[in-house]
Amino acid sequence: MRWHDGLVWFSDIYTHGVYSVGEDGSRLRSEAEVPGEPSGLGWLPDGRLLAVSMRDRRLVRREHDGTVVTRADLSALSEYPLNDMTVGADGTAWVGTWGFDVMSLAPRRPGSLIRVDPDGSVSVVAGPVHFPNGATIIGGSTLVVAESFGNRLSAFDIQADGSLSERRDWASFGPVPADEDPAKAMGRLGVAADGISHVDAEGAIWVADFIKSRAVRVKQGGEIVDEVSTGNLNCYSCALGGADGRTLFLCATPADFDPEKRAGNPESAVLSTRVDVPLG
Image (cartoon, rainbow, N blue to C red; front, side):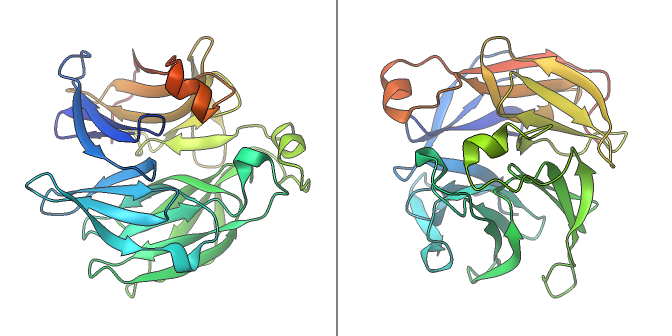
């Protein structure tokens, strides 16, 4: 989810749609249909929406007239679905890949990071990465990526030619699990980092913890300095925004995340709460 142009935007994989809604919950609007299941969102410099289409492994673009077209086909670079994304000021997109079939609890394998250049060309720029998920860019030059099964947020310097530096820890929550069994690996995670916010005014990042009903505010290095609860729903994404930058939005859904069950019995929610430190 993202705060953009005075609205909070989110992907609903169960209805295959991208939606926007006002800060006060008003003006819920369908923005794009993505039959391949939408995930990460971003915008080109001219305002056109980009969305990850997970299952068919494409990056799609909503044109100014509302039509949705393919911006880039990433299927040759990833056997498994795509994941979250962030988009730089020049329109470069950074997209994570699953690396294994997490929905069937297949043996855990690392994924990769794919760069989609403004001209639509694609390339793998980092890997192995342990289920790269939420991402943001700090200061225009540091890419921070949540590794859901890596127990960490990882940082990469973005070089002038678009390549990435060697990975380093931005925040660590414990050792990287060695288990191939995803369920066992999840049990060893201090924070199962999913979607993340852009950096706040003090340099911290809000992180959705997908195996718990919470989002945590994390400083560089890994210190957790604040936490908010999502009640009886697990938290899968978050975004910091609002008119004064002090509203934290949270995507939450039941822990089973069974697509067939969820589509027929919608219980997911977009929540919000007020926080002390505004968006940076």
